[in-house]
Amino acid sequence: MEQRLNMQTFKRKNDMNKKIRVAILFGGRSGEHDVSLMSARSVLSVLAPARYEVTCIGITREGEWVTGAHVLEAMEKGETRDLDRVILSGNPKQAELYVLRPTKMGAKFETLTPVDVFFPVLHGPFGEDGTIQGLLELADVAYVGAGVVGSSVGMDKGVFKDVMRANNIPIVESVLVLRSEIEKDMNAVIEKVEQMGAYPFFTKPANLGSSVGVSKCSSRSDLGEGIMEAARFDRRVIVEQGAVNAREVEVSVLGNDLPEASVCGEVLPSREFYSYESKYIDGTSGLLIPSQLPKDVTDQVRDYAVRAYKAIDCAGMARADFFVEKDTNRIFLNELNTIPGFTSISMYPKLWEASGLPYAKLVDRLIELALERKSERDHTEKMYRSES
Ligand SMILES: Nc1ncnc2c1ncn2[C@@H]1O[C@H](COP(=O)(O)OP(=O)(O)O)[C@@H](O)[C@H]1O
Ligand SMILES: [Mg+2]
Image (tube, rainbow, N blue to C red; front, side, top):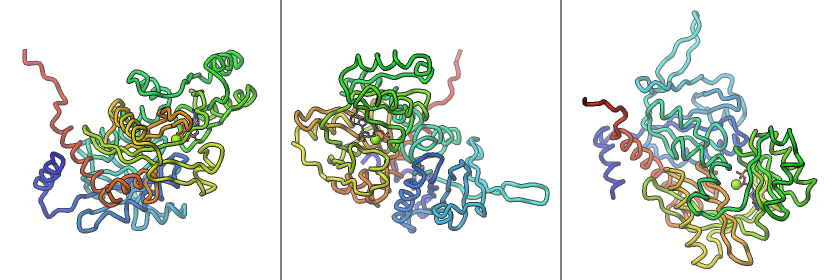
């Protein structure tokens, strides 16, 4: 109800007949560039023209911002040379999008369009990690999803785990090692890991996604290789105790201050674990929705998901991924993804659909939540002026 009121206030303020101007950002500099294009296509297909005026902004693999009539198609084909270059200024007084037009003298900026709300449909580094959220904050614009802290803590597997420990949310044992420690004395690192428990361990770069650089290590030599592999992608490496014989259970969370959890789903990986190949190459990993777990277990999972969401100050949405041991139903939270896969057949929207919220309504709701959060920010004093 409160959220509906906010939406109405927004509409009144901005003329009831006016459409909401949405800019979708997709592509990006991460390994999940292609997934992002697929997610964006799904989002675009449900943004009702009667309600929204949509601008599409592609971000190339090199980080260039581009737009044009068929920007998504062009990005899908990798043909972005002829597209217009776009700039979003971090200056709140110039928070429109600008197009760079070549002139005889060089180039000039032309205003593209004002935007009410940005929708970053970007996964992984430079999209889901707080960096683009930082630019959107500087520009003082509304945007879908978590803010800077929620995004960056959700992305960083090291800091995330410490925050979960501080909030008594169960996670597997882990150690964080620096690349410099690895280079200095790999044996000492391996000893430190082995003190944590028994094989298998999982090695991961602290800040990445899509299972890139993740290895399952069943022996000391695997462990050395896994650590080296993860250290290629980050200067900080996480080594975790493997959850053995565990289900991968996921739950979708939606909301700002009062987030709600969907029904639970289970991933059925096509390989030994949910690796990059299993996620994107085989195409045969299955989703079981809803998961077939006892109610007390799913209630507990949903409760942990909401608590974790609040603990990192998430907003809009996140998908919480868990391990649930098959023999004991013991639960461990693995991670929160603040911009989860968002095609109409992805787990995040599918779980909402199974909970009674269809895809198009979910997109509407995320936009409402973004506007609500912006109006909350607008009511926050930003400058302290001493009265004495
Ligand atoms: N501690 C663990 N125990 C068991 N399986 C794990 C563990 N950590 C990761 N995995 C497997 O590796 C996959 C990718 O790891 P994850 O931490 O989710 O990285 P990403 O952020 O790249 O998705 C998981 O979905 C799971 O299949
Ligand atoms: Mg994962």
